[in-house]
Image: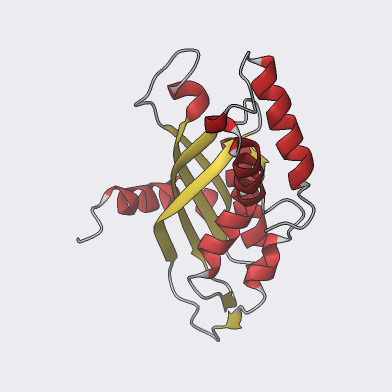
Length: 193
């Protein structure tokens, strides 16, 4: 977890918030809530100040035959929307066409987790993931598709609990419509096909 998170300050702010909504933060049932929220926020925002490119440091050369495509789909995604500090959850799908280097598959979820563990908006998150992969691997192309349900849409305002937002970020060869279409078809197939 991020050492820069000031848990006592978060706990004090939560106590103030509880008071502001008309609750008693010293009520038995709420007495531990400020500390629990501080611990949760330290986890939620553990990516603040962390360089996600460290997860790509172990990339290895692939020689003359880099392969056609690397696609990792259904990466669990959890973040907090910076507009309302409400969670959004979903899946990330990452594809890249290697040029000279590949990285271990576990590095991709780590990049997602680091970037998602900050106050975020989904559109920027996808662009950041694509940029980190482009900068760290110098692939021929990158495509990042994010699908997420947002607390700010589901639980307040329009209250559309089943709405899912899909964003796409692409670079290089995978920004071409035909290449994107091929990957989107692969994303639509069940995992056991």
